[in-house]
Image (tube, rainbow, N blue to C red; front, side, top):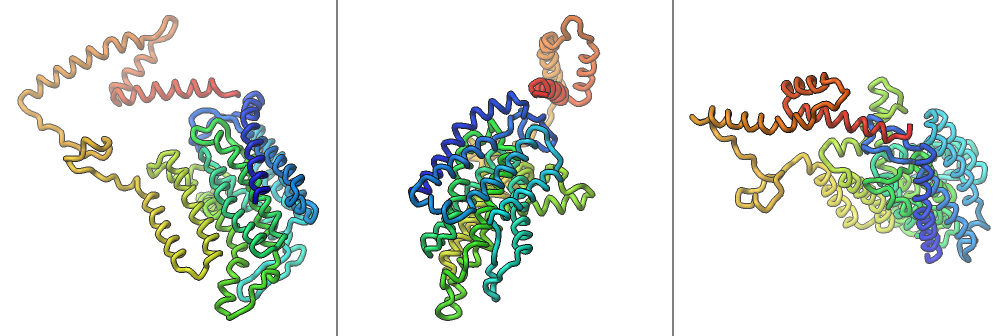
Length: 466
């Protein structure tokens, strides 16, 4: 465990220290795309954060290769080299996409090639534990197709969820933590060395996410881009493939005792089939909903929009940080809930706890829909949004005088403002006239909003690198 923690810390430290120089390089290289309609951020932010994550992964694997116990993983298995080969390929494709925005079909082909490279070097699914049947050996083609499908689905699921500051890196870090505990339990608890590569992959993945997360929290100073999201998706899929297809359930000797005990004991064997799905449950649901939504509207499944789950949380009324924390909560509940159930599957308290936490999560999710109102005596102690709106005063005989005084005061206040906003020398006064007409038609707020928006857009365009 100490060597795993050392590998995690080295990976996190290298990723954290390299992210700052990578940000400066991304700005110089022009990897700061213009703000799109579906984006949530308001200022151009550099990408290419995956460069720091990739070198952090390389540093972690290099350190693990020189440690006493983890060195056996590299001597007895070729999976770390397979992971490094596939990760280098998918990382290179992501870097090119962050800079030049390559076509989606080209990225899909690159993902399939990266998965094929890992399969050729031995990182593939060899058998599957099927409930009611037992261990089913797969042919070479079946294992290859299933491995490629799992890699492509995981990569795109993580890529789809990367829409808010710190969302993808935080969710994958939570998923990697749950997967690390599960794989370490199989390796240490059942003394199965075939689970050691997956444990190492999970530790490295946690270090990559933890090192990048401080730079990516809201407001983010750098984005991981496709070079980072596809990379961590590949590492996550590699760990799931290693445990699912390399660990033989017969080695665990779980078929002794009564039939009921065998069913409960077989839960850790079937969990590898469910753990990858529970880890990416939220991103996978977002991916499926996006494909259905876009296809139903007659659009390409690869066409971007603002219908993702994190966009819907913002539309409900959650703030940026609260939406990210809610997604963290659900990722932790699903991942660690499945992990806890695999340890104590016969305990009903675990199921009850998961149900209670799910109810709490739903309440937090729908909380902006319900705005509570404080009683009259407590209004002075709560924020204004929780106070009751007071009814407007009825008009009386002094209304004309009040209206005239208000209008005169407004005209006096508007006079100096108009002089301050008068056009400069050499400018045409037509824009001012248009602004006056807009203000007369839509009110002062409408004219102010239009003016501020145009200035913000001009400043935003001036700040872009293109």
